[in-house]
Image: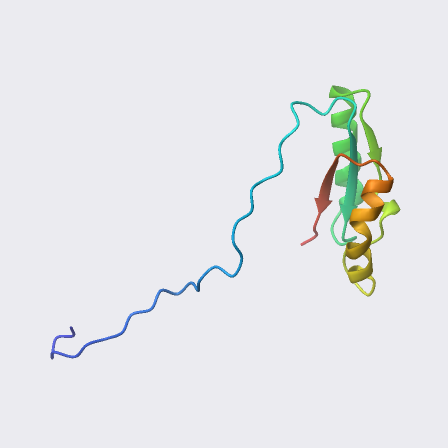
Length: 105
């Protein structure tokens, strides 16, 4: 109640969750022998970051294989819906075990 006996309705500023949380996919014990794809929206230095990440991972897991972002197209822009819709089939066809997705700022 307010100081004059008024009542005020109070609302939590966050709405209800629209989506239910999903369980995470099982994690690999290590990345040895795995194929990792880089997927990018072509907005912020992914070409540099993925190159550094690939070198670092390759030094730890020499038998690891990589599929570059060029194989998928940009996940942002005019073709983004088609690119994203086609990802599952393309990833399967390329034998990809895991994805690193880069989103620009």
